[in-house]
Length: 301
Image (cartoon, rainbow, N blue to C red; front, side):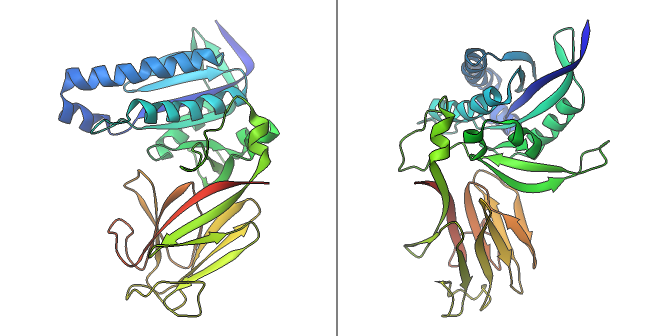
């Protein structure tokens, strides 16, 4: 039996690098580790009124009636994965995508464009990252919208218009008290600020502010590396986001925490995600005097 015109929030969660986990730990130990995690994740889905539709490989597909519930579970899943892996030599990590829109419900399964877009989001996500779409963000309650940031547009097969991909910033700063995600109004009581660290010093970019980076002493953040250009890059606040703009000869490299993928900017711009590394003129994967650390944190009003 199927029903057309239903609206649901669909959530995909997938264990990262599961093949390597099975090879390293052995089939039995890896399966037990993943099953323990799935038991925790499934309880969280059910506690927020969601339904686990099915497991596919080392991933879960879930559905919720409201997008706020999917948002909370996505964040809770990531936090639970971190907590469960505390002290482990090789802790598990997951990536999550969720999307809200019309679906077809048939025989306990879900189908349609909303599901296809969700699968694409999950494939784009980095380890320990939650991705959604701008349309889904607009369907969230106001407090939760402040926890989401535009990243980039992507084309999805079968769709004419590109989809704006957004990131959910689910982790509080290490020095901050854990936020109760069941109270979304708390999320609205903060602005985002960007912190950069280099050479033992910290640099802050406030909403509406900017910061120049380069080898020349006239910059706000001086990076005396042979790989950096004199005026290499600029970080600035735009609306509720922070943007990295390359102005160099050799490019600027952007790497998100937990990801092996790296973005190289050549006279281009990118919206910064939650936290990661910036390499001036050379890959950020090889730490050195050309690499900066960045992270976002909330500032109480």
